[in-house]
Length: 102
View (cartoon, rainbow, N blue to C red):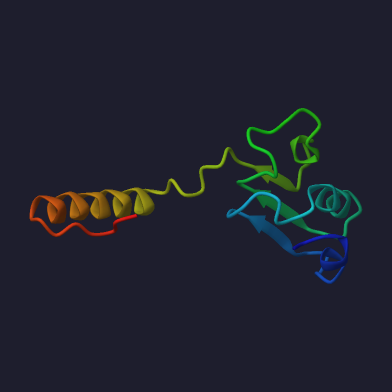
């Protein structure tokens, strides 16, 4: 979805964040844009292949790039919400009214 053409449309001060799905941004194009001053910064919590393989361009250390180990979902708020949903699911199941059935 985000390749060289899309990156060229951004301001040079833009910061690209990918916290959702690996592969949404062309990793090589992002690195090239960062190195050439066409992108101000980037943050990735997901990579196209996980665990990352040797040679992934996003593993190159750059001052304007942050890569985290796929943990953006683990905020205190998100964890509390997961526990609340789980508790509700258990209580409803015990009450004979299962919910969130997959």
